[in-house]
Amino acid sequence: MLPSEIEPSPLGRLRALVIEVLWFSDRSVKQKLFARAKQAKRPLVVVAVPSHRAVEHPERLEPFASLEREHGDVVDQLLVVDEGKKEGMWRDPVTDLADALWPDDSKAAYGAARGAFVVQGFRPLAVVAGSRSKDALGLALREALARVVPGMPRPQASTTPKGKPAAKRRPAATTVQDEAPPRPTADEEAEDPLAPALAVLGLSGHVTRAQAKKTWRELLVQYHPDKVAHLAPEFRALAETKTRALNEAWATLEPALPDD
Image (tube, rainbow, N blue to C red):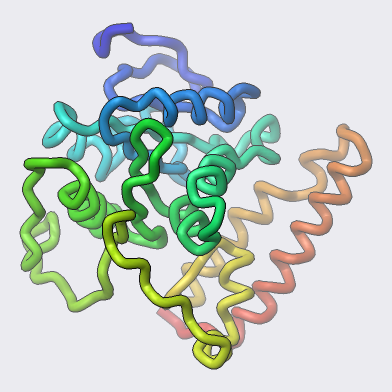
């Protein structure tokens, strides 16, 4: 199908097929995603788009639209969109693919599923950690791609996409060519007692109470038992377990996280 052709979108109306899009509500989304990763003849950026960013035209979202305009001739992008529908609430195809690409590195797989990653011919090339603004994600993606795409220029390290001075930060991306960072020791992990609760919400690093609360509420809506009341008992049990874990995590985080 040519990029100028269009096909119906599960969210309504039509979308242009410039950046490829898959949908959680599609029963065969996992098979399609794995097939695309295996067939990729050039670097393919895979990103899971959460339900709060689901729109009729996800390929217009930033930073993906800008990345397509600037480097679409050498890089492909695939957005896997969670529309927040009950048909897709038990599917997590991006996590399944990340686990398959990094079978012996759960940390890399988790980071890839929660952020973005680059794959070619079912070979992982780079991971970009999640929990970023769209500008920071765009910069991190460009930095990662510059490492693995021959001839692709590195972005200006001194400025963000908006031209503001970049704050000092930890390296944005890791690649298979880089030496893997050392895993934290048990003592280091003990220094952050909130890490397990943050992980339940899919968060990591420094977040505010408002950010965590927003994520907690979105996940509660997504996994509420009422959404699966019409399904088999095991689905309701899973939803209740997930909801209980979310509430316990928020109870831990609410009094401990800083205000905005």
